[in-house]
Length: 119
Image (cartoon, rainbow, N blue to C red; front, side):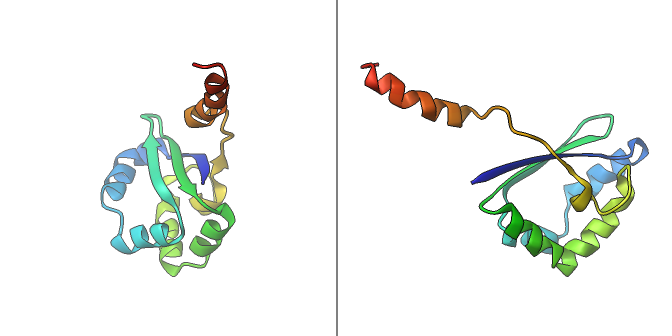
């Protein structure tokens, strides 16, 4: 499973409305996200509008291609674009973040070492 984290900037004067819109995402958009192969999808929003998104998928390319061809996703992203600083569809302008630490990965690396030492 590939873990994906990204950042966007919500316009400070649009934060309250952005929160309202995401409290009840269109059911058809929820189904499209799920059909794209994204799992464990979350958005986190700071008071100044910094938005961090996270999801897991088997293939970023397949997930992106599925949503890029989705009429529902195109309508949703067009409506959401007014909330963000910058130009373009937010799903295509998000800044990906590099993962520098994952607990389970590191634990799995040390477990065989501990077992070999009789621990």
